Length: 67
Image (cartoon, rainbow, N blue to C red):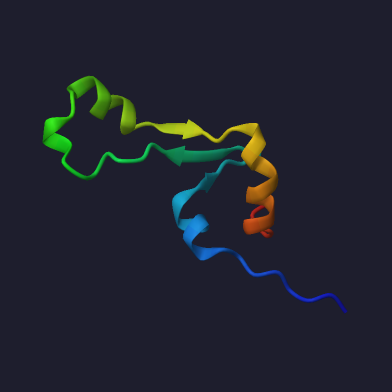
């Protein structure tokens, strides 16, 4: 029998997976010293962004049961 694969818990908390299999992430460096940042930067950083295709292979290894 093959061994079970472990889910990387830190990555599962940081990434959301859509029904079609896309990875959504938040931008970094936005919760700290937020008042100093411009309003446009704060609005932009509050949205979710799609992860790059180059990182998809690594995500599939870290989150084996997410699909």
